[in-house]
Length: 212
Image (cartoon, rainbow, N blue to C red; front, side, top):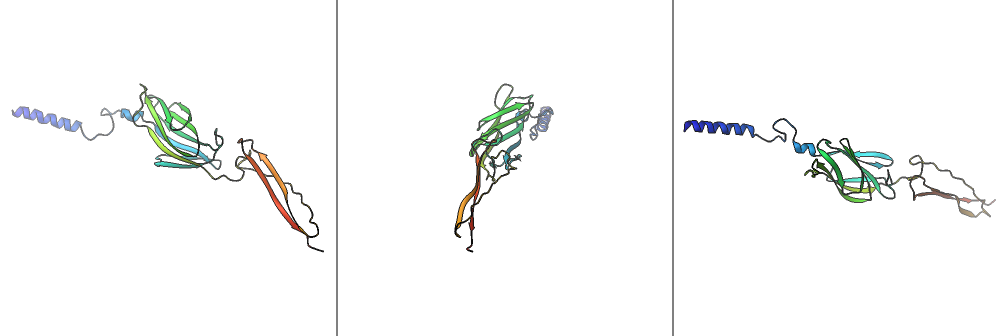
């Protein structure tokens, strides 16, 4: 009886040592299989005043983006937002983004999703699939609240942000000392960079001729 109790105690000790607190790693030293399947965010990028801006993780619960409209391949009031990240090409068969209509580039362990988003809100999910084409149970998610930034004068001009204006002036003499008010310069330019935009410039001037 004493011998059996000794053997039972030794078994309990061995089980206690081998079943310690979980580390999230394979006990044989290999990486956690699930961790190898989960993709990673790199950044979210967009354009403000002609300059590319990036957001890096961790992202806020709702990420607010104020960006230029009609940037990249987008037109009208749509905002180009680019989602970048990485994945393990040896374990993952494909990566997809849902929540927005996107153009995808997924290869060699990197993914890029380009979306033309109208002002408003969207819930974005990036899902990886294993070699059996089954979705990994821990996708990437981010909530986007997008709005157009305040535009500076000349936005949409072919040479924006380095725009220039040519103004020609021609005035009339006043008659009998009266005040003359008229438009002396006006020009409208159609944008060749972003269709649907025009830029109109002009100013008025008045003159007063004193009595002799």
